Length: 404
Image 1 (tube, rainbow, N blue to C red):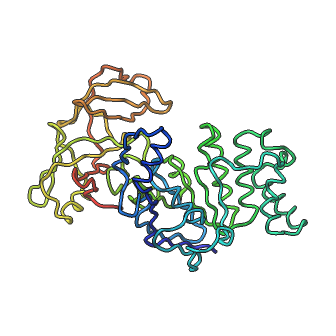
Image 2: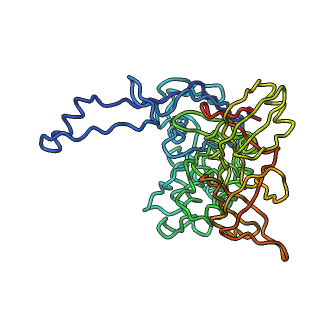
Image 3: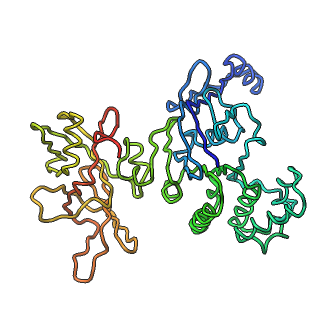
């Protein structure tokens, strides 16, 4: 059993003393000052330093598969390393099975970690790489052999046990790295972008292998990635991060159906959610939505949610996923645009449409024989599925209808 609790966890990297830093730069350059490099506006700078992770709160259940997802530099790997004990926690508490772990050494946390670059010993065979963590713990030879054979069988690397890492493909090396982690039978398995070095086909294969592996291990998984496809296919719950802050926590379906804000809406889903400027007009307890000259229908559920939150007449950002944009030449009130690019994707077609300078992507079924084919340069008219329209406040960027 392995439950984890992160409570108000914060990580701050101290800044160097500016005068000391200037003196070092002058010395390196023979006395000339380098221009001062200002930090990114996305970073939070305090008197203590740069805030990499801020007020991170999460409860993880036994055997749950949690995914941290977000763009580079958002703090997801830093959070993972704090859980592993490779980074100190500036503030807050980390509990594993109810035990405070802030000052516990990494080796005593019963955690295994799979790194992005595999971190295999090149002079050792696959078998020796798998045996190494067991040798450190002085596991008896007979038990060690059983564990290594089991891990090799689970991951399909038995034929490669006597090879060196340089004789393996990228996918095989990744399996060895995972095997070295699971051979210890850890309570918690941490994975830091383990598939980022693989090509698209291998990534798909390894995602499937990780799903199968999860069913065979009695462990809690915490997985870091910047790839939202990996997050959606692997995670029981996903933690979306940006600039050190949690944006939303939820199941893949919750994040897709009811994103908390514009960032989550744009990050989750492929192709990305379309965004239009619109106006929400309140008349009594009913609402109308206008995008350009067109009036867009809202579902009864959305109407009810807006009334309960007492939403008022205001400018809004309208979010609609490409698969929820409906081509329609017959409706009395439609949005019009010009097709700029047509992408044939096999079972469907992606239309890139210019709507008054705003690009809209429409996912449409592939035309059947006898149906009109949409070509680049064509004028199309479309509306939205009323059950799948998202409304965001332009100032706060929050979803006006709330989370699922």
